[in-house]
Length: 94
Image (cartoon, rainbow, N blue to C red; front, side):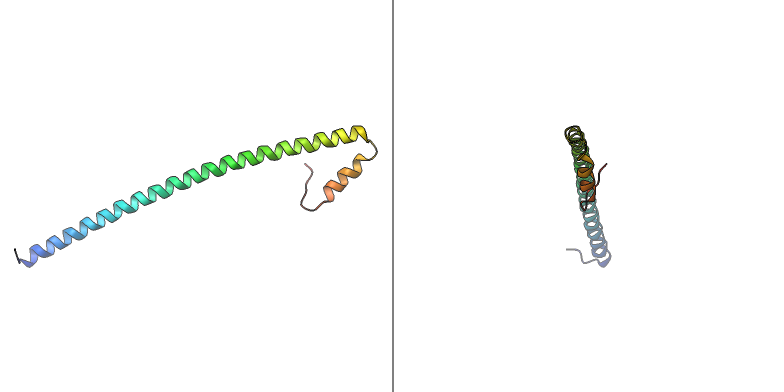
């Protein structure tokens, strides 16, 4: 066994360097996994947003069709239904 202090110190520094490289590599891998997970989450949110938008547009069309149908059946009473629908809290007629 060599007890040369410079050699021991050099070996220790090299070991620390190797450990730091390993930590950096692990950190880079973890950041990559996190980034990929965030990108996938963003894609799912966009897909959900599109689905909700399409559903909302479909419901708005259905409401308009129902109002048109009601107007045809009860010409004098339809404005009452529209006003009532508009006045309900949290609802919008578009």
